[in-house]
Image (tube, rainbow, N blue to C red):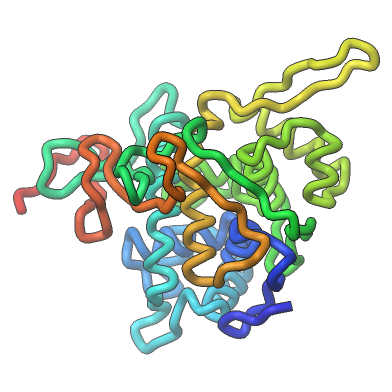
Length: 314
């Protein structure tokens, strides 16, 4: 076992960066805490309480866990995001872009992500660091490490799958809606497996060391959400595979952003996968950019507006 910022995480030869990042960040409540800190500058407990809608005891435990992990610093100003947390912005923004596209079928999202100084909204996504083309799941080849071993999520601050009305009690936005789909650790790891090409129930079970009842529940939820499609591949006995839909494939930027964040802040591991961007033949080293104009973006390049709010002059 390796210790990073005082927190125990699987050591080399155990788990890849997506697993290690998932285990450190935690569940949907921790994502919402980071959303409030990074996008809405929350610092005080009361700000986080209002923004996340989390129960007080849950919020206390998540703030403590994120502080212990080195993402928040407890100061006189309140809970201040560290550079480790600020770098998590990529994960939040690509999730927001995906949620904007797929999770508001009848309404516009309540917030717009504006690309400051441009005449369009910011569509945050990952670009290839070499050729600057948008990374697409179909254009990246992943080679898994032979030393990776199954690791169930730790029981530190684990919640069960949260209903949509629970996780959206605070601020309504595309990130909170997306978290109703992937916001528990098992679902996040199942999604990781989907992008590695895992399709069959027994393969998921073997790769993750997950209990069959939990796996059945999570796969059913992903199918119901339109993220996966259940496809029969054998008549007798009837057996099915789980294929990513267009919606599911478009989610690719989130696990890649999480992988990149994990490698930067939790260290490289022999268990990490190797990604190759086929169009340019180079390693897929993602950078955050705007999918509309191709320019790199950071926090200084974006602003959050109401759905009908015009961009303010700079």
